[in-house]
Length: 580
Image (cartoon, rainbow, N blue to C red; front, top):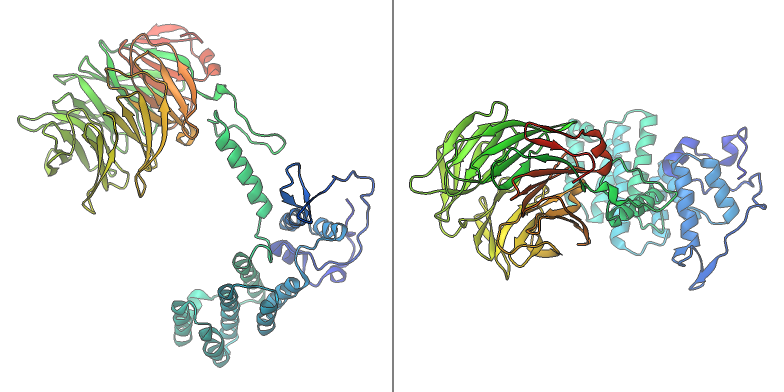
């Protein structure tokens, strides 16, 4: 493509400098003939839509809009000559002549003339005209103050800005800047001509956001459209599960199933009975598991896989659940209608035992700052404790069941628990407001998303429901396919941006769905007993753990990782080499 010769004087093309053109993405005032010819290039056939030429196979893209956006992108990228050439060759200008005049008046500080031109551009929304006028006159006001023309600035404020009758709070601020010079300096500190010119460019950018896109195309519009297309492609990709997966403009994006952890990398065999619960730490460096054998185990995660760090003993009953402190330095374990124990992750020492005379704990959780712990009690209450064991508060009534999960939102406001067989209670501690998620079937467990916006609810009828709990409660999606008839089966969010749902199942399989579409992606064989619980590593979207009645924990990863681990038996750990 030809362009303006490098040695052609800038003044011959336009008064504005190349830098100003780049900042404004505007070169449409260039009218000189440009050298070069594209006569040898093939042209796409154009179609008509309502009398307007369109491009693209779907007939959705208007040619004029398409060319203007490309021109805008060229100027934004600093390709001034190429943008000018495109305007010249296509006959499609980036801006109308009036808009070009308006932009030049802004840059030159011709405030009164720019207000007149603004009214002539053809805007129909009176509010937009007033708002744009306010921005222009505000700039005029500050530049007058900067030149120490206080009376002229005051006159502009009284006779031009105030009569617009908008943004009264800002008018008061401008008035105070006259009374108090320090106030003025805090909002207007540009003293040099170059800085003042730059502020006018900033004003143009603000006006660009305010005016309709048909008048002034938004900055970086082409980049926004391309990014939007890539994000939509990624969102529609069932298997997208890696930040390292580069996206190209040369081809539509598509990931393969190899991005989903579906290969058994390790089998952890240190529990002596059914494994009921497991959960990765927030930083992904540890995994905690609990069992019917009345023990819990802390596993350490490193590049070579998982290794046993501590086996925690002391409970007199099976351990139903565990909960990591926000900083991952401590771990709570909850015995079945027994006590809570708090453990030091580094040493494996039991730091404290929480109990209530004649009652047993059924669930546990942490406050976001790690200063308090919460527990569900088998008298259907929920208690809050200090770390030293002092009970701070107790919510009586139908707050929880003997079999229930417990979650606390990251702002510490909401406590979530199963309060009836078919209902989940969301209790706002500060507002003292209660909301209920009500299902038609018995609820067996639930899980809270990392962003606190969604709740994953497991039901007795072999369905998993996804609820949006932000604002009005809304059922968003359902996931089916797994088996559940007798036991408590748990599911979890996971993968990159928690785009997947994983669940255990009584048929010994681990099920994985795409969260957005609800499509079942994988059913992973390997366990020989009911899979009770799953947990996805929050720091590694390619690591998933499952706990089973077969007394084992399986660590699932990508197929290409299995070759890195050797076939061996050590410390209750079986390393797999691509086999299940």
